Amino acid sequence: AGNTNNNNNGIVSDLEYVQFHPTALFLPNEARFLLTEALRGEGAILRDLDGRAFAKDYHPNGELAPRDIVARAVFLENQKSNNGEHNAYLDITHRDSKWLKDRFPTIQAHLSSRDVPMDFTKDSIPVIPAAHYTCGGVTTDLNGCVVGDNGRGDGGAGWYRNLYAAGEAARTGLHGGNRLASTSLLEGLVYGASVGEMVAGVVAGDGADHAALEGREKVMETMHRARQSIEHRLVMEQHRPLSENGLNGHRGGSGAQAADDRTSREATEILAHLKALMWDNVGVVRTPSKLGLAVSELTAIRDQADRLWEDSNGAAGWEVAALRDAAHSGLAVADAALANRVSGGAHYVVLDEEEERDGTNASIKSRGESKEQDSDDDEDDLVAARA
Image 1 (cartoon, rainbow, N blue to C red):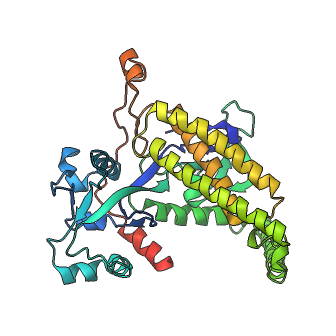
Image 2 (image 1 turned 60 degrees about the vertical axis):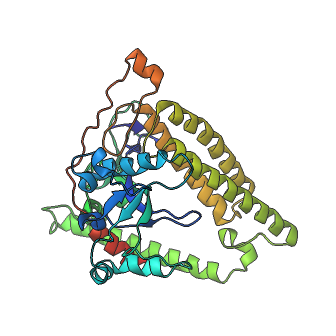
């Protein structure tokens, strides 16, 4: 780990380490639903279309191998299908039906609520890896303060005064290149509290210091005024006509509305292409040639997205905003991945044949693999509770 993107003033790093959840429910034209890794912990078996268990082909621990290895196994097995049929399934039908429904109520509720219900206690479930967590992000120190080169481009360390980051947006270094199960929850709690204390002017050991307390009072007063200003702005926005609300509506007039609708449709189509481009070229298994192709296409998509946003004069629909953000983020990830030819954890590179023959950058052994056999059960429960 350690790749830094200086195109963003040197404040982001390790963006290539995108962790994939090994077993998302695969149903065409439907949003991916994560099937908790606790299923495998309880004995679920990965099988191909013919019913053959394949996980131990990739690691002695089979379904309990580190998640990056399991994700690659599921991905590669799906690539073996010659007739286009799906080729990776999760099978836990050998366990008691009532126990499974009680143990995994969220999965049971989701599958049974579909127009065409599915029963994971009786049938194998089609699965595919899904992008799950970004180990990299905005680089911070132990207090959550953003670290970067302040635009110098020389890679030197520096700090951004009054700029902090915490949670998945931050690259604290805690995860390395392969996050352990539920570590991100602890990271968010610890660094979130640290950022809050720093912003409020509380420094360890100096909490009772008079100057520190005065600083905290000033910060709290500023935050209170900012909160009042934001609340006032939200109230005003709610009472504005839809035609004036930018992202919440159209600019007014049938002609303008038609133009906005066309722009939104165009943005939606481009975003669908961007998603396919990322999956095909910046996904679970990467090659330098595909990453180079992705960077080239994503650069063009980013420029196109920026034009759509600028032409809208701030009145674009959410589709255009989503495309703009996805294009910039996708390009940053692809750039970082292309710059790092060494596999490690969630970033797995297979060198192109030409490079292998030349013997350049031939080290693709995965380093920093976790010993994880835990599950994201706590994390899945939290996500389900928030949904």
